Image 1: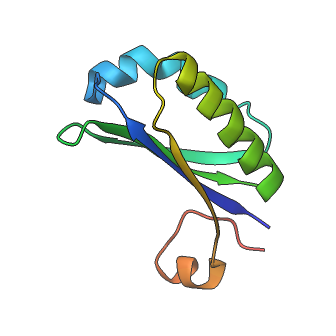
Image 2 (image 1 turned 180 degrees about the vertical axis):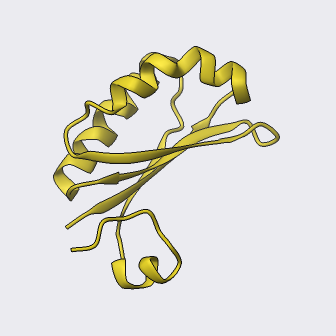
Length: 103
């Protein structure tokens, strides 16, 4: 069963296009993570937050990614990582055009 992973953390920037330029390589490498279907990058410059919303094939791959990503962020000096794994209600998400695969 697919799982949604929500991650956020304190982030001082850069944001916007500067962030995109700086993190393109990281974004491309995330596509190779086991079980990862998609990611939406999130940022809030006013609140100094970064993060993402991910869809994984199952809970095991979502949990493994969260552990690896938290360790990577810790090495970058980011210690306040919050990660939550959720079930996806596909029926209701489909009504609202959620970007998920049915079945």
